[in-house]
Length: 102
Image (cartoon, rainbow, N blue to C red; front, side, top):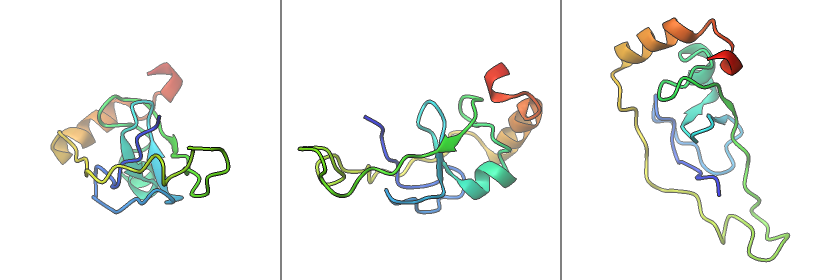
């Protein structure tokens, strides 16, 4: 099941489960759309992959046992393990390569 992380790993913006501006990579690294667009240029600083909008988990239990109340979002913040200068350098190296070609 997808881990719904509570914050942007770059700017620490709160990204609650229903946030429409949360983006994830294939490793579930989570960033806000502003950071993805303006700072990261669609490059995950952790894995080099691209981003997609994070799905919103249903609040209402339409199917038994399947909803936000039964499978809560994480409350443990995640932060970058790299310095911002390292992130900028990495992003610059790969930003002009399409995510599928990285």
